[in-house]
Length: 366
Image (cartoon, rainbow, N blue to C red; front, side, top):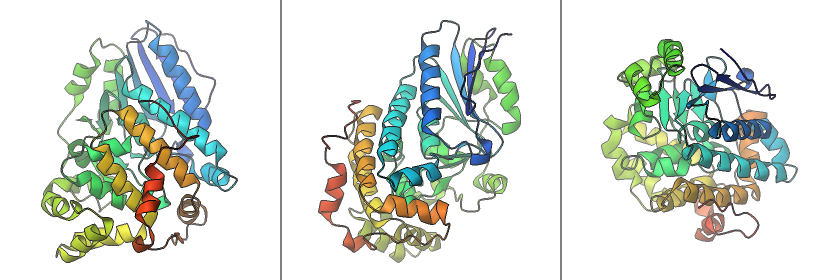
């Protein structure tokens, strides 16, 4: 068995010369495999090479350690760059979103294993893959509104296409999904117990039909209570059972009306989610609602990424992204001072500015 390893220690790329399985492992376990610009470049270089390599029949993406595939971007590095002007973060977003698009149209079977925490940028690397696997340890989320950003990396399209208003709920609140909810909402295809992953990888290394191989190792997702116990997150509430009040509340046209409906619903969980929305960046939640409504009409992942790039670049020009990262990651006081501080302070013109084409900030994928 031969092996080829990339030069970037934070991304380990190995090709099984016998079975034709290319394995990419994100290798920053102490940082929950959070993404740097160099990692994005290394993954792209590897995927481009393997797309043209006849020896490679399929690709598997995993994360080092047992805590998660990827918690998203390296927010400490992002905060340092954003407070210095944000040029590096713009370049990071540009290359990250282009990588997301490549994964969505990759010419060979791409298997993403979302074992453990998979959020933000980790969703972009995995949830557009051809074969997406969750385990009992999976915690899936697009938590951007918590840090003053809007769901990106193609996440706006996934949320917009989730059943009913489940995606609106997840996007505005930054709530997490367990494995069953990830399957329900279209973020994953198969549940495979974590104990069976080594067996699956061995089978894939000798398989000529990766889709059938993954399906053969898949099982029904565990009940929500079991997933909550496995992850330690009691808030993985089981979205299917909450569809009625979620659809009714989040169908409103404005964030203010959504919050009002949640508070008036009489559902205890709904009040908790209203509080979560009100604690997130007012600008981010209003732009998120507009972006998700627009994403429902977009024809492709590329079109969604184009829209997200405009929004993310606009966020770099405002105060909330730096402040949100400060409060959640740098100082960890969990007390962001948003600007504006309230939903009422965010105007329709403010929201429109995020969605408008930007002469110097266009991705041009679609």
